[in-house]
Length: 296
Length: 296
Image (tube, rainbow over all chains, first blue to last red; front, side, top):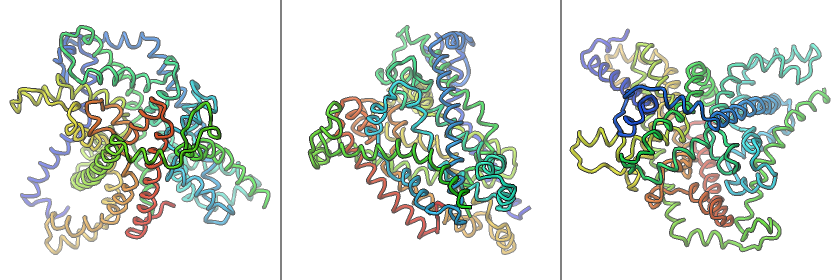
């Protein structure tokens, strides 16, 4: 207990500060609450802009329609497959790459610096959009889910996070395993991976969220709309019609009446997986990012 | 022993191959910046045009404007994304009730994980002339006409910077909070004995302790000087605000992928990647010099 806690000016500051912080953090939630409220409102109330932060004329109609929309459900499934493929294959490549690179300092990997720079350079420089687009065309990956998965499997930043974590593992564990006749692969998967589960969970979360949210690759690499992942579908659905109207949607436009609640329901369901995993993994990512970012 | 180390190199192969295909091959594809590239003629058949595409880039009014916009928007974002998280971390650090602290953190980190498709959809809706924000502002300020948040260039820039800060400030506080938590309590106790107020302690202990991490985060953000945020702009902009809101990435997409001017598009992209490379290398050197920061 510090002395200054008792001074009057600090107490006044404390009350204002806490109020300010609470209001600010609620502002972070406001758009989600708004979209949820619209999605749960009656079509006429939403179309007439009567809904702000609480549903008006509560109904689940928009959710019934959205969940009955087979195109939407299938896009949801494609996104799920994409996430599973990217997390599993991406994590496999990440640990396989990070393990040898974590041995550079101990001299276990000759020429390791070269390989480290090989990966780091991709963080510094890239071919950009158009060469990547031509590459996917030439590889014949257009309209394939692999066009969405393969380019994102190696993320150098994740490899760095992983290898920084591997370095904190006591060498004795590795030596004991090698003594017992286990090779490096055994050591990696029997010792390193189980010990690194928090870091693996963190990186998996980052991959999963990134893949779930990715939409642009779907837009340019996939022309058959029934193969679009959820985010690409949402992007086409939401942004384009509203943009062409420039927000000057007239209240009379009857078509918009039911559109708006359904759009909101689609947005909310699209965000739901992230909202759902978020609280459970929060502590992991805080640990993970601090380990990777501010290393002593 | 030698045989065992071979395994280490084998482990690197998947990562090296994927990186070669999806990162280094597109870099090779950058040669089309020096060609009048026609997809049916390919890399070897397309005619070489030297620096013509770059000359064109610096002659066209729209591409110059786009470069200017990119610097302006990215610069404003960098500043805002540095100052706001520092202030927020300082204020949050004063909160002593763990429950509130945790709750605030949970809420402010959330928007970071939502995609610009989702947030763009919600923002377009909220900021339209009939939307929630205009609905709240009009009566309060007695304005007779709705504000064209997304139809006026200057408002658009303000919306882009403010909404990006809103999305990222919480997550950016993590690294500052970690630093604050690491400050030696003995210093505060000593200041306490000397009768220093909390404000004085902040000025003379807290802020000086944060200077290294502020330097690191600030200099490293220089690497993003041409990353004005493709996802965000693409999901919010429209032809009315191209003069103030169009950026390099959206421009490259429109002239390259949509209009098929591969050469010019790649040249603009290469310009961006090159400036980005120079900035990142400079930033890392600066961060190393000023704060002894190393990525490995």
